[in-house]
Amino acid sequence: MSNEEILPLFGHNYADEPVFLASNMLEAARIQKGLFPLKVPAGCLLDFDGELVDFLVTSGKAKLEPAWPCFHTRLYRWEVDGAEYGIIGGTVGASFAVLVAEELFALGCIRPRPEQCIEWGKEAGFRFNERNRYDLPPYHYGLIFRKPFA
Image (cartoon, rainbow, N blue to C red; front, side):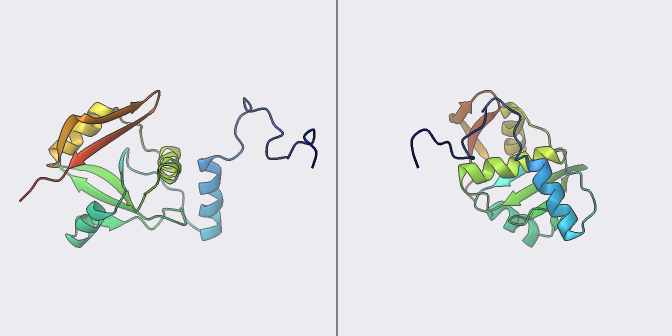
């Protein structure tokens, strides 16, 4: 292939609207699996190692959402003081976590501000230190919480 030939993958204007959207992927999976349309809770967590999911499921606090269309993850729902939340475990890897987050946003989850997440984490009993906050404007950030010691 000569330097003047452009591969179809790269032969487009990067300012164009994306064709590959999480919402399209989820709709195709929903139809393929024969599932009903789904609206996820407004507040959802990505549990990278799945320990919190395991705890919530084992303790009977979280229930599997059968209408979640993603092929590679499972969405669980649980309630705290009358508010419903969603959680997905096993979201290790930045690019995979971003894809799963985009799927959640496509189905009704809100993009919480970092301050909201910090508040929720503290309410759930986790420890947080501002040194463990990583801002990646405009929409992304990382927060590291610590489990309290018994």
